Length: 443
Image (cartoon, rainbow, N blue to C red; front, side, top):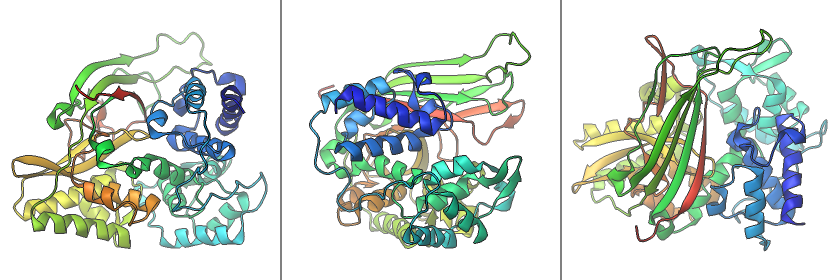
């Protein structure tokens, strides 16, 4: 099958996922911005195409895959199929159940085990906003499984068209279900594919283009204040090559039946990054990193997606037994500061296949700021296993990754902030799109 035919298959699959007509998805449509899609669901479709056609798209190509035109170009450039579409440490994901079909009993048990260990979103931060079709699309399972989970205690509220679920509960439930095909599992697998590389691939200079779109959560006309955390790659041997930003607002709406688009912010920048291999010399630092990673491995602190108000409250998150990249970094920084080290937390962009903001911490040793990122090391172990990811685990203990684009922002701050008067929103709806602009060797 040629590249154009694969592109048309992708168009049909994406149209089914986004519940739009195929003709609405043009070759230049940004796929992540299709209705209800996002990174994980786009990657799940790409994964299905990879398995179907025996392809493994190189990470360097995946960074540029934002449209169907990109997909056609990439498949043409990488026309030779490869024999293994999944890492050896993971079984081939099970086929997606047909509509109305039933998941296997073994798969259902995996969902129930995940539900048993789930740490639910605190009641005061719970929002039942996800409808049943969206939940099924995220989970990649059938109605029987969802009904069984509800009977066994999956929290839900009443909506006008059926039950509504909390997005963080669903994401965490799916991330640990073990099916291999839920959107969170696919997103993690793609985002840490870089861990299969080498120190050379993690430190060589790279040039990236990042576009960050953000929308006012109030869904109305808005002329309120936005603030962008400055991109600062030069602190780690990188360079900000170009940056533009814009605030876009609709003009008058010509019909009362047509809703205007809310206020919209865009950041567009091109950066050169450079990773650096560094080791922690202090036994105290090495021990603290290992302890933080072991807490996550063992489940003492369960790695989960959490609301913004919880991820910036490391003490509350730990009391609940959960953590994400931000809260674990903040706690590790507090531990090392108490031990007498000079530390800081950092928020920036993680230029993975999925492209997202990310929090980590840094410690000053021997006159150099060194990055510690146990959460990223954990996700690599999920994909590759502890033995195959050992080099990357060690790299995350002090080294600086060329996929990090640091901003002048603490881990507990958002890189894009929006106010209405004196009210700062906890977070705003965003889409981050990245492209590789090439390897910058020699610059």
